[in-house]
Every structure is written in C-alpha cells, then in structure tokens.
Length: 390
Image (cartoon, rainbow, N blue to C red; front, side, top):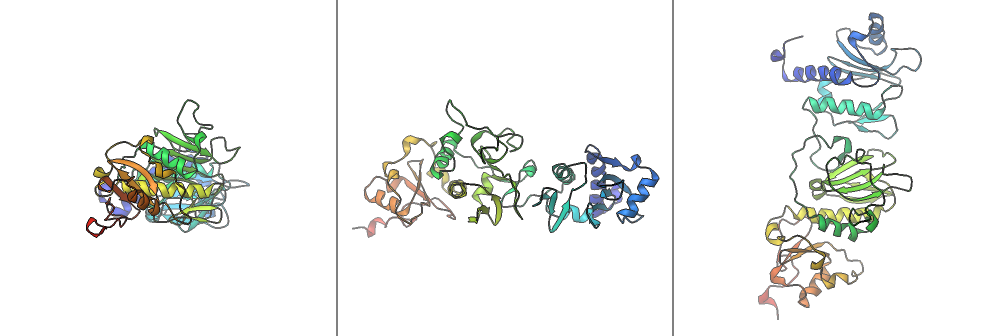
C-alpha cells in the first residue's frame, strides 16, 4: 500500500475507513479479523461473497445459518461486501462516505442506507450494533455529515453540528407544554411529586440535558418510548418503525425553529415530510410543535432583545388570554409587552385587547412564523397608524 502522504483524497478516505473498520469493528460481537481467519476460511469468504482477489480483507462478520463463511459482512481495503440474503451488495469507501448516514429500516433487521436496504439477519451482532459500527467509522473518519434541516436520528445526536444555540426561557417552554395539551401536569418535571414516569435517559440520549417534560407512549412503555422535552430539544422514541421515517429522532431547538412543514398523515406526525411519531395524541403534539416553532423562530428575529428583556412569568399573562378562541381562527401571533413574553394569541384577541387598551401598543411587539423581525402593532397590520385613526 502507498504511504499516506502519497494518497489522493479518495484513496485517503478509503485507507482511513478500512483501518477504522478493523480497529473499531474488532470490539463488536462476531468480529473476525484477517489474521484470525485460516487460509481456507479466507478463500471460502472470497468465493461465496464474490470478492475480487485483489481486495485485501480486513474484518469479517459471519451471517451463515448452516456452516460457516457462506454469507456475512466483509470490510476490505476497497469497501464492504454485504451478503445476508440472496446476493452480494458492494459499497465502495467512496460511496460509503458520501451516502447519507444509515438509519433503522422498516423491518426489525433492516438498515436503510440511502436508496439501499440491507439486512442483519444471521449476524451475531444485532442491527443496533451494526448501525453503531457504521456510524462510528463515519464519525471517526470525519465524514459523518448531518442534514442541515429537519429531524435527525437519536443515535446521531452526538455528531458535532454547526447549529446556532438558542437561549430559551424554560418557564415559557412550560407554558407552551400546558397550552398544547400534549404534556399534562403529571408529565412536567416540576413540583415535589415529580414525573409520573421517568424516561430511560440512555435510550433517549438525554446525556447532561435538563429534563423539562416527558410523556410515555402507552401503559407498558416503561420509559422506553414516548416524547421527552429537554433543555436542548425534543427526543422521540416510537415502539414501531416507519417506512421512510425515523423510529428514534431528535429535534434541536434550532431545527424546530427551521421546520417548514408540520402535519398529520393518517395516524402519524410528519415534519418536513419525515414521519417521526405514531401514537395517540398526535394532534396535541402537532400543536406543541407549531407553538415551539413560533417561539423558537422568534429568538433569531431582529429586535428580539428589545422585545424580550425579562424572563417569563405566569404573572405576566393577561386576563384577555382566558377568552375563548374565535371559531376557526388560529392563534399564531406571539406577543410581548414591556420586554416580557405574554403568550400566543389570535389576531382577533390582539385587536380587541388593543381596542380596550388592555395591551399597550407603544410597548408591545409581535411575531409570526416567517417574520423577519419583531414588529409593532402598526407594522404587523394589527392597528392603523395614529394619523389614520379617528
């Protein structure tokens, strides 16, 4: 093999990935490195998995049901050969580092990798282990790139991403939790009683995050499945997989702020056309996501430091918030007054409050999704300019 400094970029990627496959993969169940295999075993692997003789075998994971070395996953210096069913699939290292990060497939032993679907049937290592191995090779080789928008897999949460950090007010997050109806009082991590059910922190990748709320998905979920809101974002685990969706997903606050679509399709919740949730109370989760997007997007808006200067308090809520919503009208305006967030209201509620002088137009600011900056009542079209009023 050529020295490292003589390799072109694509060859460097192949060299690094091939070395990492052996170093990292050796710690996983069922791993057999080249020096652990007999000449006869290596010859059989080459024949049965259709590996060209010029490839240098690095590490092998057997998936043979009867006998040995008839099927499995092989990492060589050129890429990986995957045969756990009827044919061998070859993925070069160049394709490996350019493809999207692998995800859970629809079936329990399936891995979705771009347009491919691979299976771990027969391997001593379970699907989760193989996904972890493939992700580690990408991460350690510096080629693990997350999508710039939308949800990511929980297992990819540890991959460094260049995302702006939003400074959220956790008390206002609690207000949004109660407002949406998805998180009830028993789901909030506040008070002496605590949560009815704690999530399993390792499964939800909560790490050092502060837990704000958690709702489990069913009576037998036992903290394994559900939705957790932390100081960093939403962590979601479903008991069942999706076709072309994420069984386990994470949405940082910045990613929630950047969402373009939040919708229901049958019994599923989709964000930016990716299924992330399939359980009861999907309507309430959509309401929470919409409210979170409204609030979180406002934190990057121009004049935010003028509109929001003081931490949120329940004492700042206005009496007119208790009025019933007008039929068919959506509450999609975020309102701040005197530097304090007041809450989310409909246009009719705001106009009435301004008319009754319950809301001071001179000290109030307004935000809507897709706004460029916090606006005055006149700029938001909620009140006529003073010289037009009579």
